[in-house]
Length: 331
Image 1 (tube, one colour):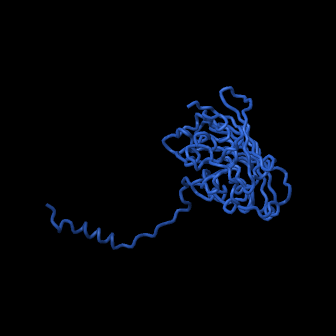
Image 2 (cartoon, one colour):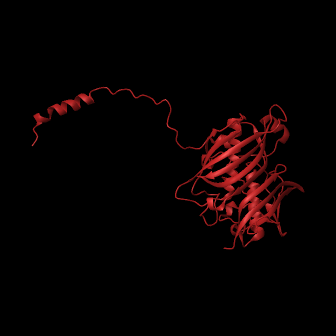
Image 3 (cartoon, rainbow, N blue to C red):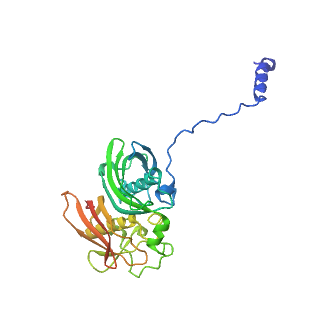
């Protein structure tokens, strides 16, 4: 049994401790670096959840180590069976990396407009399987500036090697031109944004999701024309990812999605996963003009894959051309 008198020194010590003013906390010189995405403005996204780039470090004047992360589940970038990352997520990641480095390494102001002329990607299917944690990626990115057209214009090519741990997951390249907002407005005039674009002409119901390799009706961007191998481009302008923010033309990633869906519609009931694509953008796809998407199978280099050439036209003029290589799934 312990008597109160025996505990008095301990109580006195506790009372003395609690009665002493605490020492002021010393701020750390630098907060520990933890994983987070870069600012959404650098990759031209309105929603933080759609940012895949997490940081970068310079390796030389033109070569950079970029980090990225893909979530285990995404509402749009997904495959029908849900076991793998969507290969087109690699295209979006490459696009974001190019924009991010242009702003942070070339010093392109945030209010400048980007014109994307090309976007190519190729993926390794075995490195797209979804694991027990989000997929962390490292990207060796190379920026090559082209001769300036004007003092305020930046034209550059961008190439990327994407690795998942030590393994090659994807490669890609793109070409961009940036112009000041004032120059862009002179070039474009008063074009309607997707939030205020005139209603699209009546084209009937969108294609069934299963026919274009999709699960949800809201993700379908094509409607039938009545002609084999040809469809209307009819995306939902309120789509939270395809139209993440307002713009005065149809985004390039929407056109790439239309190409993927056209390849699936052409080969239905066989589903095609687009493991690689090479895309050239010829001109802007306007909101207020009907767009026709056509697809045809073409010879490819890989015997087990299916190659499809997809084109988009407005008023008879080409908007974009994509050559897709996909793995057919008989299921």
